[in-house]
Image 1 (tube, rainbow, N blue to C red):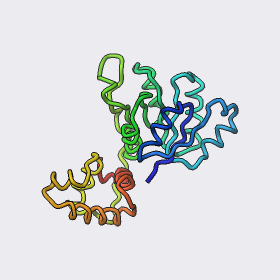
Image 2: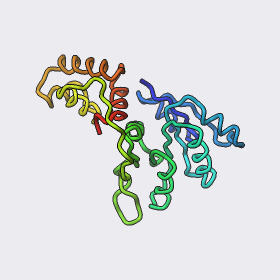
Image 3: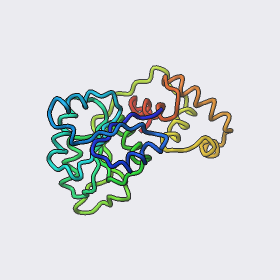
Image 4: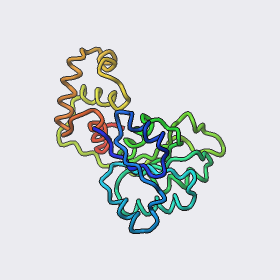
Length: 215
């Protein structure tokens, strides 16, 4: 499953980096084209999973754009920049689902995207933001947890496997961790996909986070 992303004000180099990963399909947007409210509204109504907005050089314009998109879209909204000050990052998080430093990898951005579905706000990459006096901590306080909904409860084994999948484990690593065969892992994953009404690992993790099955 490719995550559909609208990238606003992002460099062509960063967009190529995202598209070269297995996670994102990117639609580039020139921030200068958003010269009026109607243009921003039309952008906000795009059928994408996530908006990436580079606020590094846009200042108040970037934050204004963010607020408008938030009003008209329910997609995940993540801001990109190089600032690490508590004031800037706290402000960014107050109007978005996450904040990433501009050099955040596609894998780190994926974690931010997944975290949004579990009601958490993340800053990435973690190693770039040590907990010091003038920077925010890695994870903001969680929002009210989503109600747990499990129409088809997972078995204990399935829950263990799904948790490991959410941590980035591959089938062979899961088998070694749980002392089972790879064939068993694959069989259990098929059962998980069926119960969660999905057809791949990323979708399974997103669905599980939405339902509160994993955290």
